[in-house]
Amino acid sequence: MPRPGVIVWEALRNVFSKKATIDYPFEEGVKPLVGLRGAHILYIDLCTGCRACQRACPPLAIEMVPSDLTKTGKRPVINLGQCIFCGLCEDACRYDALFLTDYIELSAFQQKEMIIYENEPPKGTKTSEGEEKPKEEDS
Image 1 (cartoon, rainbow, N blue to C red):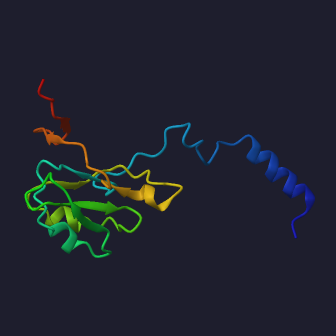
Image 2: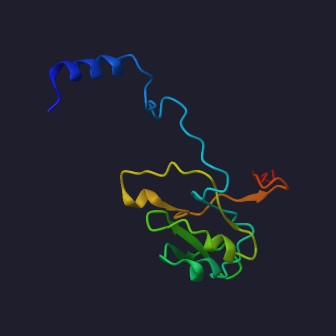
Image 3: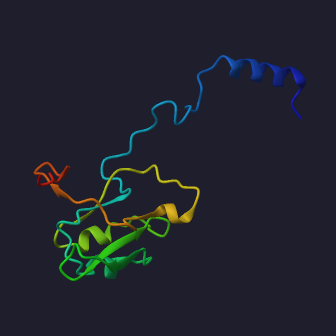
């Protein structure tokens, strides 16, 4: 058992040393590494509803639901709570409609908040840089 003098010395030494943690989310945290797989982004304009992403998903985190936005009348709904972020759905999509982003701050109080594109996803087109650009509405 350490002597009380050693404990007091360690406590005083640690009071004046640099903090080992950050005050997240108030301070900027660690940036994700390049190539890290996070939340999905779906370009519904490019999606045909072919179900390739659903068939490629090992944990069955992608479900196809009826939609008027695709050729086949189905579109993917992704449950991030079940997803293992393997990237197989992204590889399986031959129309480049589904991508994994580097957004990794995925937390929710309820499980239903982890389901993305449950409602109709916003329409958008991909620009040459890979960024999503909202479609302009016709007036």
